[in-house]
Length: 254
Image 1 (tube, rainbow, N blue to C red):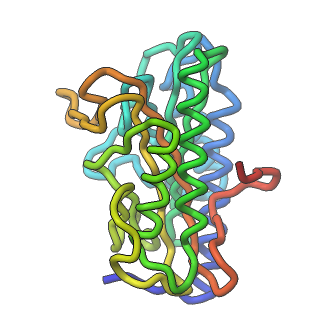
Image 2: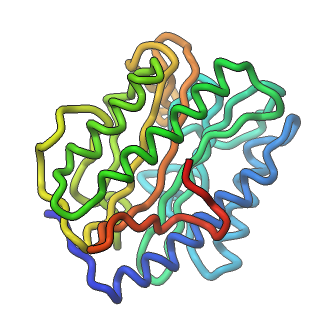
């Protein structure tokens, strides 16, 4: 069942979304060669806790950390630890925060130092696919219009989209209905209505779309070893169009 949020609930989600965005920005500002993913995790947790919030991910189905930190061919759900980032890596960071009983969820992928032009192009395409999906979160559109826009943008840039994982509704629970695949034909699924809140999250691969899970039970990586990127915003459908709830002041659309 898709839960429609009241204006009062949306205001609480704005607050939670801003906290998740601050935590993500705090992590990104600390990304550099030599830093460990565990150190980045500590920065996110401190940011969330200092604001009176709780990490959405820590303890969720047994996940042991505040952020997901996925490097190069890792798509999502990488567990932070003692690994040091290296010059030329791509790092995907996913952060969620609970505040006032509601979740905010966002992710981005960034270059560690200077990266190859191929890696830079993949990063640009991933962010473009995110905004292509967000633009479709308009009242009267269908859910799969978001999915189709993400896939079309990815294909236009020559990349595949991961099919085993999807975006989702979000609110009092981190994962609510509906599931939002990043591929498919337009004009299908539920009609989008004001008060729906969606976590839109494209995952683009450099090569084949297929993925596998490591023995740790969490880390998902590309089957062919190609690079992958992950971008996400929590977005409210409003009468005036999509409202990005995980957007810090100063962020600009691509």
